[in-house]
Image (tube, rainbow, N blue to C red; front, side, top):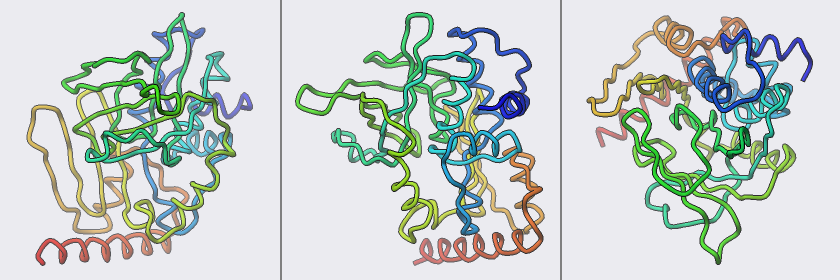
Length: 283
């Protein structure tokens, strides 16, 4: 990572002095990343998915963009290495609650672990509504801000790895292999996820941003706020002006790379999907 990209990345996170590697510093970096860098697929929606080279992703984040797991965890891992942390990338896979018993790994997620101060942590900025702070990589339950997260080690008859569980999340189960991985291990799956018509990233426009108290989510034209112990609040965005204002203000995603034609195309695409969704609910 060049010094210029590193400086721009840290400015995006609002961190002027990250200090030397420490658990305290790692926690502060993850919190800042989740608060300031959104999980988003806007460029995929426009048919121009960005590559997942970590330096490219870091450059995009420094410029005000976001991404999904291959971009977010990929870039964050590179930043942490540039700051002196011991980082390992792993092939992971997201599953739904009904599949929680499964321990296979689909390859549609890049997981990060970091060793610092004699402890290994699961570091996660790429799930959208994952944990606000790193979790110790030890089997057990961890309560954070009213949410309970669990980590389980693979059974002896499975490939060595871990399972992360968060029952109330959009990604309630994530399995990952213990073995180290490289960016090349995710390229084929990124191509599928970012271009195939059966991919959720292609079908649905989505942005998520976590803070200490909960998660803001925009799926299509529905903006929601989820906080543990509180009713979910939702509202429908009814105009392109409101839609793009929410993207910029709630999710801190700069839109200076969007032409008027881009805005029109995205709003049209999102509105068509929204109307189809409403029709399916009425049916």
